[in-house]
Each structure stands twice: as C-alpha cells, then as structure tokens.
Image (cartoon, rainbow, N blue to C red; front, side, top):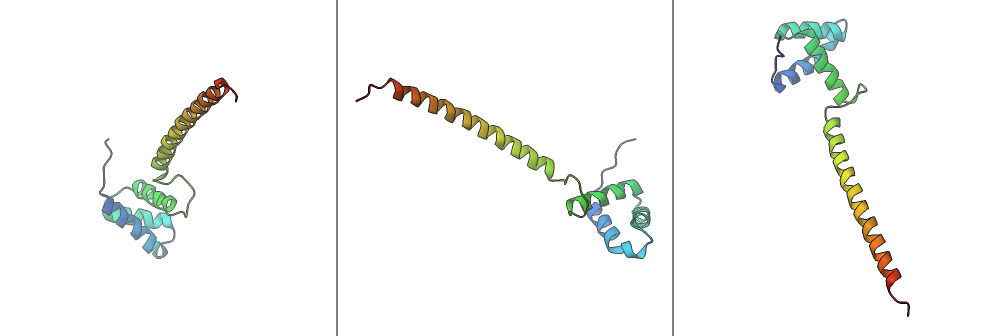
Length: 105
C-alpha cells in the first residue's frame, strides 16, 4: 500500500483544528480521531502531524523538522573550519622553518 501525500495546507488546517477544538473533546486523542474522520484521514496520520507540530512548536521534546538541515549545515561548516585550520598550521610551520633558516644578525 503506497503512502498518500497530503497538501501542506490541509495538514496545517487539520492540526490547527485539533489544537483549537481540543477542549470540545474528552481528550486530544478523541479530537484527533474525530477530526481525522471528518477529513477522511487516518487517525495515525493526524496523530503524527499533531506530534510533529508539538515538537516544532517546542511544547514536546524531540528533533524538530529543521534540525536535520541545520545539523548538515553545521557539519559542512565544521569540515571547512578544520580544513582552514590545517592550512594555517601548515603555513605556520612553513614560516617558522623559514625564520629558522634565516641567518641571525
């Protein structure tokens, strides 16, 4: 069975409805089931969207949607800094050796 892709606008609307109408239900789970049924979306899909929104919003611990991209950028930056550091070490050693070879006055 293939994964069904939903437009981001629909995801945002469904999640917003769960948050806005939570108090009308006995639990968040009941809201998820009811709202999912209204849109013809499985409760597991809606639950996943709600959990992701809670993590991204900071109300639930976890890895945010932006974390993997930020981590990749930091790793790239770290590699560049290590390369630059190695170049500077090599240049420093070269110039130190040059100074040692120059006759003292």
